[in-house]
Length: 91
Image (cartoon, rainbow, N blue to C red; front, side, top):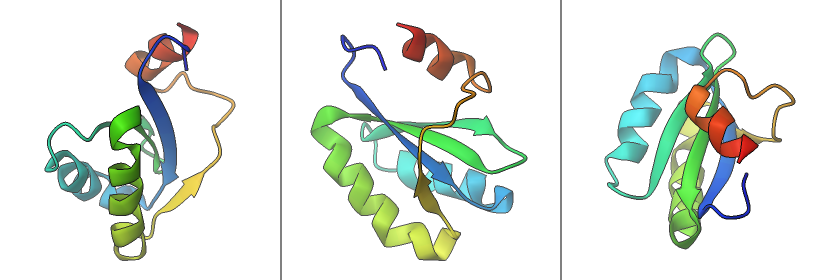
C-alpha cells in the first residue's frame, strides 16, 4: 500500500459461495473496512481496514473464519483483479 494511505490490507481466501455473505457480514459493521474481491473463482478477497479499526476487523475475521471456511493469506503477486485496490497499491 501507499505509505500515505491509512488503509491496511488483509488478504483472505474462502470458498466462493461464502464471498457475498462475508461481505455483508463485515460491511454491516459500518466504517470498519471495505471488502474487495480480487479473484471470485479462487475466493481471494482483500479487506481494506483503517489502521484504527484493524483490530476490529481481525476480531470479526477470527470470529467468523470457521463458519465461512476462511483463512488469512499472504499478499498475492497479482493484484490486478480489482481496479480500486490496484490503484491504491500503486500509490
